[in-house]
Length: 402
Image (cartoon, rainbow, N blue to C red; front, side):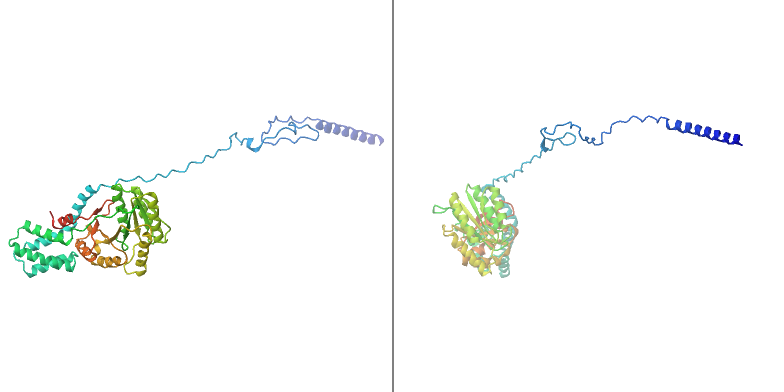
């Protein structure tokens, strides 16, 4: 029995020893070597340990933020301010000479007006001039806005001269009609636009009229005519009620080198007119043109204000010219306008615009008879140089054909 127990103990000891050897051998087995590593350039640098010396001394001079380059080594971009664009002044135009302009305008007037003359010549050439024919002649003249009284006078003289003449050849009738029409136009009128002052001041011209007659445009065109004649012109933009009227006048002036005196929109027209004349005197200008606001002839307050403009301007010097602008296409209504304006300011001359756009050229005769003042200028188109002095002979020749 003891022998059996002893054998069991020995077996347990042997098994235990063998197990220890196996476990020991497993613990001593070396680990596989670590794979080689490359430094991580993106990793932040390791913090220095306590007691390590810093690689950069703390007392080294520090750089400012302006001295530090941005990533990639590029410097901060330099902003270069571009110079403001230079606004060039508009080129100064040289208006067409008066002589060449008149030749062209005569032809245009002839094309638009000769219906009246041809109609009269046709009627006068009839073999028998009975009462019906003379009534047709009267109707033709009235339709052309010659006016009642001038028409009656013309017909009476024509009847007398035809009776004395007897036979009537076309050339004789043309000569007869030309002489009578010319007489109605009062050729002895002085049609010169007064722009020369008798004093040591510029000539002062005020332009008046109702809305829509082309008053501001006429003022600009007149400035062109005067500049072409070598005059130093100053423009007064006293039309402060119509939107952009001052801008329109200034544009006309800039095209020929004439300066425009203007004020705020809705300002006092008399004050602006006063300043324009004052500055014209200081500059030594030859002519001051004053464009007034268009006024309805039925508005008493506005017409009174026009009289105020005239009085204020005359504190510097008397007006040399007051031009009334009428639209030739309005016919007899233009005569009503003319009467009212003549009561407020002393009209010295008439400008008929749009004369090329109407067959009612007789308004020239009627308005002169109504006011007793001459038609001095006529507008024969929308072009910049389509304003011309009125010449009675050229006008009649255009009516009846040369």
